[in-house]
Length: 308
Image (tube, rainbow, N blue to C red; front, side, top):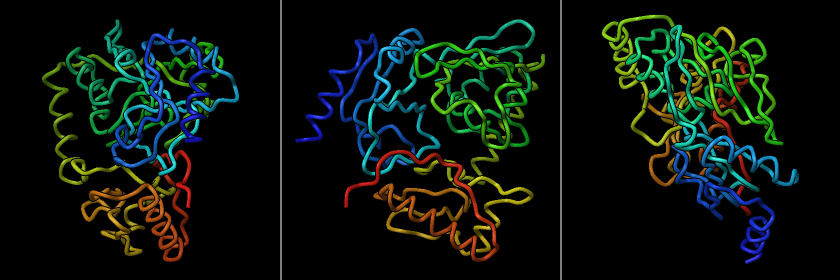
């Protein structure tokens, strides 16, 4: 009951919105791992103006966490305090512009952007078909696959700060490096402008098909997973270190490091977030003991651990 009262008080402190405010939303329904406790409140903004007004008027002591489609996210079993902003249809628009450029909302799926670029005759964005997730996440972590990264195609990103102010951030100010950016953590990306090159759709699609086929063959994409668990260490491959340390197929409860690709964790059915995170830490320890390398998490872990 105290939790319900706290959530009710939280809702009273939030501004009026055009979108939806949902109390005690189970996060397992919003992540690819299908685990995680409830968020105090989930906000589904109608569009950029709705989100900007919400951020401007929400008291600064209320935590705000932004998520996309939850493809690279592990929400702990105790849920998330404050408000979770989930970008939906109002942030999923994609449109071609002159000069082989493509503008996409941060809520647009990477694969949808790749397909839209191909349809518009814009080459160079094919690698996005190999990234599970949305554009906002790609901007936050400089997502990449099959030899290309977000920084290779980005012209500029648009983000809102915690007070709802709009910032247009050129590529040079993103601070991109391997699987990270230097944009403040409380900025919420809402849009990106990408630069490709002219190409014929019939020439672009085979490369996309090739990437999709390679993913199907080598990654457990039909499982409850979160993509690559750990970043590749400099000059090496995380999966090779995991394999050498005996991590392939390792389990904890219903959590497992995939036998197909051992840098992917999977939920075989009834895993908890604690099972998955604990298994990840066990594999990190095994790799460190076996090779001396400390793997860094690529999956973003958020929220509270469950009460004992």
